[in-house]
Length: 65
Image (cartoon, rainbow, N blue to C red; front, top):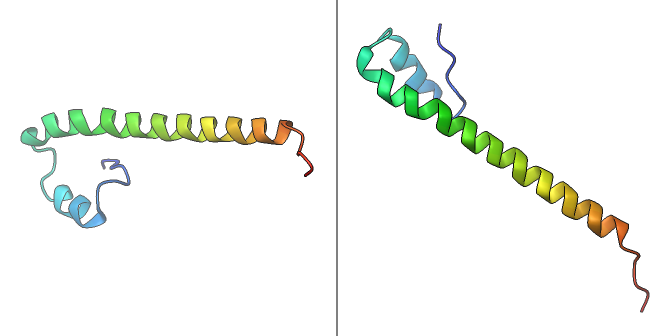
């Protein structure tokens, strides 16, 4: 049983399951998983940046006009 990241559509996962462990898929899989991890890290980093900016805004007193 293979784990496929969410970016791989279910229909494709079903078709891939029929191939078993085809050796021609290895180079693609070797590129896919690091790429998915990089996107995930960027999403986490972007979320952390957005949270920090929101905290900075919350720390600044509201100016009354």
